[in-house]
Length: 473
Image (cartoon, rainbow, N blue to C red; front, side, top):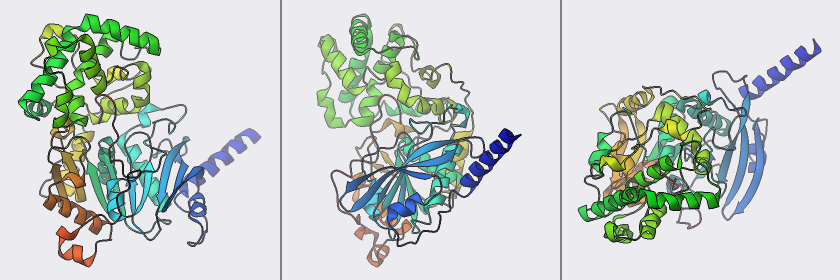
């Protein structure tokens, strides 16, 4: 009986903590920012790191595993806060993957000269429940994580909020806006893929017939094909590499499967992270290139470590989501004879341990796409002209208001507002300032006068998107 009472008491305390997590205990607004943050129920300090002009905190926040049933367990989710001033707007950033614990500033944060709250996506280590119920990894649960963090921090940072992120982070910001449209005053989503129909990927095939120049495309195609022609020889090199590194291939199934996956990522990976100028680094005559030249080119762009068990493990949450809701691209290789292709593009199921059940739930992306087309407000989507992920992108319909889809010429998966043509750059900057409530009268009268409010910092401003190995947004 006593054990039952103790269990009920503990459950009541847990539910009470989760229910009041957004309400900090009485701490005066003039108190030290660290004290105010730590007064939030469920918030704890991991470390504080100094940075000139800011306070930077790495925090852990208690989240329910299932937001629909908050009494059924919790986990600790990592958060970082780059604190400028409570009188400034706040940018809510997520990469859609792990959170960096090194101070960094997204482009919108620099534009509005604001604070930045960065959140680690659920199920990325260490923000993973134990044991892990993978059915609780979906876009609504992740959006609810953000909603709950926003509610907890809004009293500390009462000015306007913007959500942002690049690639999977841009997708995350969009999904957050879809499920909690009143939380954020604006969204800036960079290079966000939008795979509405998972089985219809012809847009990617069309992209690869026109991107860059024919000379560059021919070079890349030839190296990719040659790596498959020389498969037997280069797989011996791969086996020696794996043995030396202690790499294994249990998840993907075999070294042969991993090898083909790396090679088939080669052309995509080049355009995702390189520029047309980088074509000069690609072997000009693949048939005459040495084995080492072919290997090194593929390894530099795709990376032979990525489809090993050790390379895949950190990205299990991404592949799980790709295989259950997000979808994943499939492209074809008309310049490679079928005899050289054993598997083609493999589905996300092949990159997730078989012990984790997966079932694709059709309709999630269609729902988000329809909402954006008809209900987008204060949303900006920025794409790179040469980025493969932009082949399937978000679009706006008649119901959208004060929303924009802009493309940075010549840019890749690192496209940003700064890379837009001058008129669009000014427009985007002006809208971001306005949504954040910090547009000056001169900018409101003439958007061409819009500029970032904070100066460039080489250490803080290292880009919106982080390079993710292999075929991942």
